[in-house]
Length: 313
Image 1: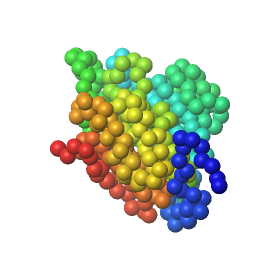
Image 2 (image 1 turned 60 degrees about the vertical axis):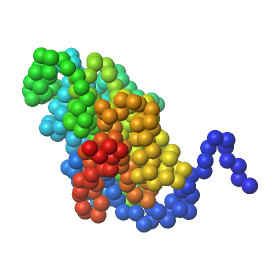
Image 3 (image 1 turned 90 degrees about the horizontal axis):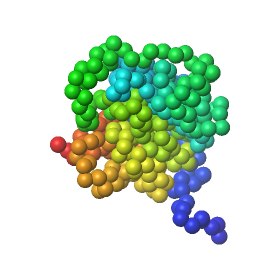
Image 4 (image 1 turned 180 degrees about the horizontal axis):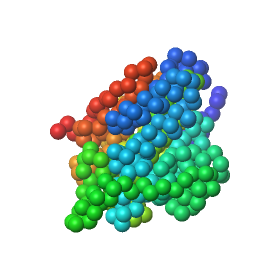
């Protein structure tokens, strides 16, 4: 008889089942919110035979370079002192991971995170150390505070009021999961964080297990919304573990949201949302407030999909 370690449960995805699943699954790219340009980039790469890791990096880079997106990368809203600081992480199918936090002046933090994963013995680099490493790796410094973001920040300074606005771009992120032709899953998450946050604040997005987590035997999950709430529940890790126990991606996302709803009496005043995909290519999503959507590229079709929610108002 094969023993099972105390406190653990065997994966519902046996090697036999895994081989069956991967042989029947076509490539899929999913991302939080209506970032269809990002899923189109990643999905097209997957169908051309790219690895999930390459596709997920290039996919989220689309939004890091999008000046109209004030929540990610170049053009991101600054903190209350006027600094644009970026956070990102990436995970590969082999379980390796890289992350950068409080990174300034580099347009593509997800690519720096990948370099941390592949070129160092570490998982996370922060602040000046992350910037120094990026420059050593050949990344070029760039002013990320656009005139539009600077104008909005100066307007905010007149009253200095901070409120998380549900489903409005002052706290959103792009998290992406890709399933390639080999049946491998990779993920990435990148953000400029809360608009006008306190200097030094870091949310869930670059934290492995919170903003992103995956296990290539089971599936993956990404998160968006109020990072502090997601951090407290380690939401993405929770979802993957629930899928390991046999729950569908949808059931796992719902359970993760309910953990916050049941423990935080203030849940009606902020948004959290989860997006998950298992090895069979099944996708699920759930959020507190109505309005969260996710983009999906599959078999040449690129769609924006509304998520079910705990509150329907």
